[in-house]
Image 1 (cartoon, rainbow, N blue to C red):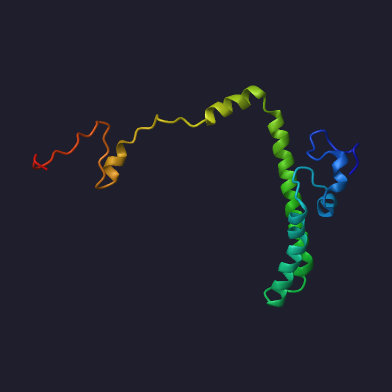
Image 2: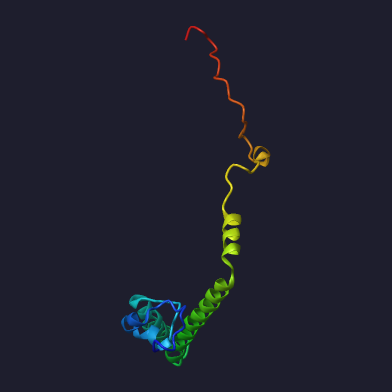
Amino acid sequence: MTGANRPAWATIPVDEERYRPLYARLLGLRFVNPGGVLCFLFFEGAIALAVLLALAELVSWWAVLVLPVVVAAMVKLNDMVAAIVVRSAALVPEQERDRFRRQMEPVVGRARVEWVSHSVTGVVITADPVPPPRRANPSD
C-alpha cells in the first residue's frame, strides 16, 4: 500500500510499512499488527498443522493448501472488524466517553453483605468489636 491510499486513522506509519512482515503486508493489515513470530505461526504453523493432520489421515491433503488460506481470511476479517470498531469509537463524542468511564469505575465499600452470614455455615460476621475471651481461672 502506498501512503496516498492509506487513511489517516491507520495505525502503521508509512515509513514503517516496509519493516513489517511479508504476511501482514500481503494481507494489507491496517489495525492488527502481528510481529514476525506471530506471522510465522499464522502461516508456517498452519501448514505444519495441516501436514500433521494429513499424515494422521484425519483430513485430506487439500487441507495443506486450504488451512493457511482460512487462517489468512480469519486474520483479515479480524482486521476489518477492528477497523469498524475504531471508526465507531471515533464517532462517540468525548463527553460520552467521559461519562462511560465514570460509570465503569468500581465503587468500593457500598455493597451490603447480609447474605454472607446466612449462606456460610460456621462463620459469624459482625461489625461490633468482639470482647476478649475471659479466662476460666484468674490465677493462670
